Image (cartoon, rainbow, N blue to C red; front, side, top):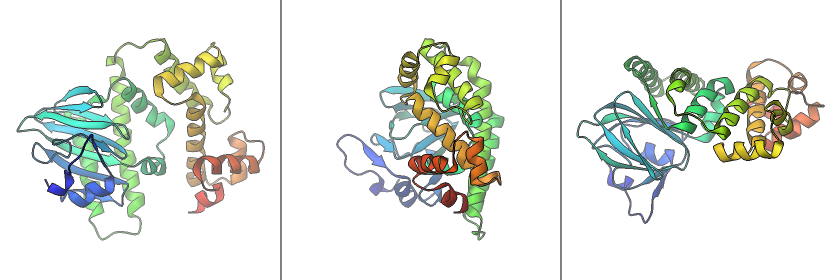
Length: 299
């Protein structure tokens, strides 16, 4: 491993995707938004000291065994397991067998927003990660995911550049669909939920059904037959995000998808998302994204 990847640190080293791609010779990457590379007991960015990845990340284990600490909890990962990391999680490999090998993937928050995975697709992954960062998969699952990665790697190094971003984003969505289906398949094996977790899960399903028409926290609390105060407290306790933030994120995701792919006018999209006027929709969209619906639609 290049020595410059392991500087002297006091607590933990925050690593950007840009830094990974520059220092790891086997890395395949798309700008500073997406990087993946093979890992082994010798090539492991978190072996010498704790790291914090500036983005989402995952390790797909192929052989051997490793014990990885995420924040303050240790997880044993073996072949046919995927370990997920949220942004800014502190990661350290406590130990790894000599035969330990897998793939490391990291992607930025802006990349996942740009890819626009729908709420119904992301929901099983969100709910699984909230209960456990480890996803057990089959050899066939791993074979399919790695096949997508290999195609991404091939195209990232090809001479076809005109639609490279769009192609890679489509392939990433393909891999995410596979992982989402596996997460949905494994949900019955997850630990039993407490009351607040049940409320959160029910809220996620309601949000998927109603986010195009309802943006009021009170509506969702009423559907669950609880007070808005208790509802908001339960959602924040379980997810770390407010119910209002979840609602806004879902609405913006729907808006982005419709602006890019529906062929509808901005006025029609505003109507379908239950905004009283196109102007109100425009202000709401710009407040949450930093750009106008028109600019986002045509860029």
